[in-house]
Image (cartoon, rainbow, N blue to C red; front, side, top):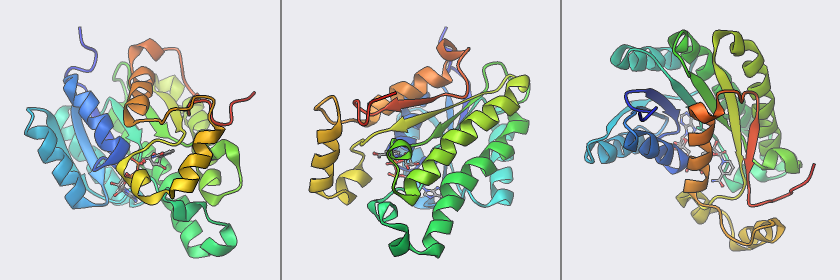
Length: 250
Ligand SMILES: NC(=O)c1ccc[n+]([C@@H]2O[C@H](COP(=O)([O-])OP(=O)(O)OC[C@H]3O[C@@H](n4cnc5c(N)ncnc54)[C@H](O)[C@@H]3O)[C@@H](O)[C@H]2O)c1
């Protein structure tokens, strides 16, 4: 029995990159995917692409920081499919820009970064939980980053907070049978990262990895399938690093 058959996954930032790859993997296994993206066109295109391959995908435009819209989005997803089984808090600002020193970035951009990466995770979690109640195996996967453990940037601080929120929500929601875990990807060559990250930075990161190979979207997809699946039924509050051994240590 395929455990994803007929289950409903809401994926923020589902229009491209990891979000679209998560949706594709879940749809291939028979799940319904609801793609939430600020970029309505990207979300729509991704949903049309999946639907053209007989997959059950729907796009809903929205900003993860907009509480009213996220409540509406979760209600629409639940109404259409009978509830929500999996939320992936994936939408995030992460371009090279947000790795700049905070004095360069300035208050406005730092505030938006924390709004999207941190408050977006809180907002979508609170909006989805009422629709997960009582659904066996319901769980949440947050997307943190290896940058959380390397320090030095506002981006890393926002993603360390995502790891902290993972523990906090796991403690709070465990009594409702909802597991909450996170993935901390290292450098994964999505289209955005390929285009935005300078070659010198890519080479530097690669040099810090234990494995001298590049990370791909499927590595993060496999981690998501493990954490969201029944094989991880006793795992909650964890952040799984998928980094090729970047910054490996205790
Ligand atoms: N690619 C990597 O190497 C890497 C490494 C570590 C962590 N991450 C994290 O993984 C996640 C996805 O990364 P990606 O490389 O696929 O990113 P991406 O930029 O390719 O896609 C992100 C998507 O999120 C959407 N989005 C941005 N802000 C939003 C908002 N406020 N509301 C709704 N949607 C919004 C964008 O429109 C975009 O479609 C991010 O949280 C990122 O920080 C990525």
